[in-house]
Image 1 (cartoon, rainbow, N blue to C red):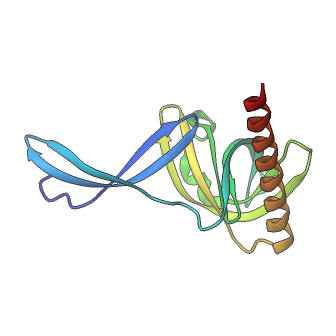
Image 2 (spheres, helix red, strand yellow; image 1 turned 90 degrees about the horizontal axis):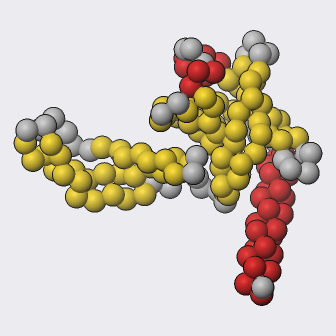
Length: 161
């Protein structure tokens, strides 16, 4: 442990994973001291935390339901119960995800899982879009901005009451 140079710190709050680059110092007896935590930004596009239903589809056409917790223009994050996958290597065969928005709009996006993290009984995954049609990306942004507008209106009306 004394030759540990860098580390990544993960924490979960309200079904969202936060990732930090950690600066650490080994202090002996298998103990470390965290000197600093810097958040790692996960997306180069606008994104929102949003609970949505989704369907993850694998190369063999089998699909399973997932809960999308964050969605943006180039990726999304979702989670499933760990018992859903006896072998998490099956996730390597995931190639599309269907996003089900509240207004019944469905968008199918090709991509791949680029990160998985097990916390408790949940498996959190980051899904990076690959070869997405720009019309699909535009539809995702339309939904994001619509949701953001609804959120701002609800905050404004709550301030008035």
